[in-house]
Amino acid sequence: DTGVSQDPRHKITKRGQNVTFRCDPISEHNRLYWYRQTLGQGPEFLTYFQNEAQLEKSRLLSDRFSAERPKGSFSTLEIQRTEQGDSAMYLCASSSTDTGSDTQYFGPGTRLTVL
Amino acid sequence: GNSVTQMEGPVTLSEEAFLTINCTYTATGYPSLFWYVQYPGEGLQLLLKATKADDKGSNKGFEATYRKETTSFHLEKGSVQVSDSAVYFCALSDRTGTASKLTFGTGTRLQVTL
Image (cartoon, rainbow over all chains, first blue to last red; front, side):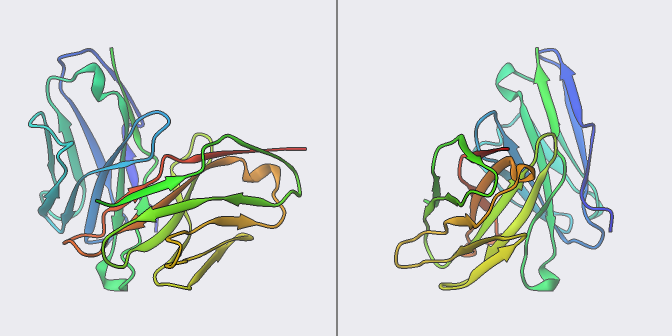
């Protein structure tokens, strides 16, 4: 069990550019979550997948954001036409409904800086 | 809606002091409650959890009791160490929807000095 991994760990981009982040969950975890954390705040829920289906999206997830989990394993989060307000830490978490506890385990995050 | 309120930090303590970080919540239904810890430069790690009223979660000398009557889940440790310096997040998991998405507090920074 290697834990949740995220790539890249840091991304610096210019306003207006598109960025894509990847999350690899703990193997065989069927649920995958994306959160966003800004400086001095707790993480805020963005969206979640059960297997390959995206079942819920937060109002924080504007039309410029899209997430996929095509084969029910890894997931990508894309931000189009980035804005300075998108600068944040993007966190991925995974969990398994099979255990009955649904406890979420987090990755190290991708820190995005939009210049 | 759901919300979590934590005491503001930073909290500065001397090594071996007693720690309490207050956490209260507002939720519909019967949430599970969690404490996560974020060490400098690292991701969120689950510290402990409790899934129903009067449950006590414990790990690494930390403990917290799910108090439904006061809607609280205060984190305590009898004797802190310098290595406990981190940011601590209280969170709840609302199981009334389709997913157990977490609602977090704003975090409390703990600094332990020699």
